[in-house]
Length: 388
Image 1 (tube, rainbow, N blue to C red):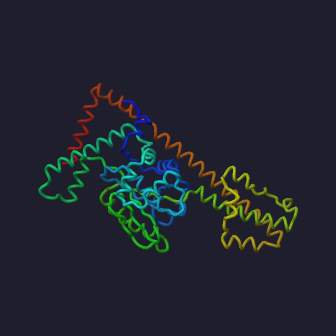
Image 2: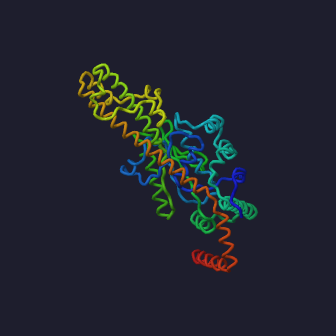
Image 3: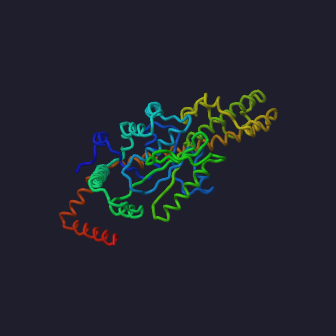
């Protein structure tokens, strides 16, 4: 059994199940061409845990184990968020998809999504041969069940509890993803397995509070049922946040340098610390343009600091040192996030390695040694004991 080739991966029309790994989602988002966003795991909805999540938060993704053959739900959840963020740079391909499908009904939009080779190809970029075999086998079983049920419909409906038990025995649960998104002043729950989105209420002062109430309710329910679940956020990328703050910082520095030159022509002589980084250096390293600096809007308090120092050489030089120190902090934060992106990409690329052939050879060796049959019999015995 040879590893999956890129051509085989591209030609496969199914959707592979994705791991619940923010690094993989961030890699996929970048490959789609979406700019300035980041998926980050959320460890709790209390104030302390949420303080570690970058702001603003564009949406939340609640995921849990359930029976589903819809392996595209991770992509659907991401799309349900990014397609509803005003002004977000989606990249050429996704922007074209949005414009072509925004007036379609959800079912037809979903059909277009399933037929889009670009979107599906990147989603499946982590697919291994064993993943595709499992997905195809699961679909085959689902089809056979449907055929059997169609020919021999049950005489009486079984309870939800017994249905859940049966599915738990028959199939391995997969991940299902639900998106929570603020749209035009309201909070919505978008579930790819539901016919329509659910409106949870007005955003109020903080839409996260509205979403959290519904998420906690579901989390408690799944916890009682022993279902695995987790939570992720899709937010503005820290690199973009640092760049925007750097633009404001540079806006203030340039205004202050102009004031210093008018007040103290040789002011650089009195600066004991280093001079601020030039816009040319910021452009080369941080992609910070002069246009972004010119259009940056300092807060009222930041502008007030600059105005209060005008006319006082000592306060002007002191403020300049503070702004240079702040610039250093922002540059460090930006580079730290760039380093994390590099680590995510490295981690994602490792997951692309297909070890199916190695596993196949190992299983073959166990079978030839007569060990595999005993292992299979033990597993079947354990399953039989579990059912009883």
